[in-house]
Length: 97
Image (tube, rainbow, N blue to C red):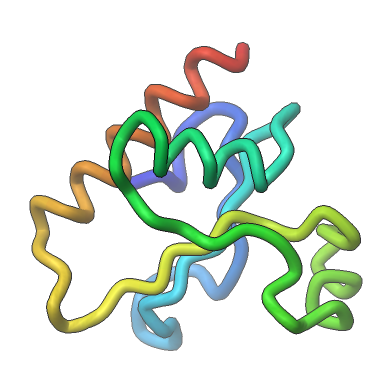
């Protein structure tokens, strides 16, 4: 997954038992909007960026005002799509070293 990638910060509860399929992250040195745009433009992966209508939550986790990049996975996403997203984040984060 993305948890161990250098320069990538994953937000939320550790493990999978008390998590929803919403995944928020940032890549060090990159604006979340730029990451989301790159995911769309170069990898055809849709993600949201920003504070996601939750400024207080972002103040709490220290990501205000820029926010995070967010994936909202669902029952209909495949393991292949998740692997593609992880690979894209890996590639983007390596370029930003």
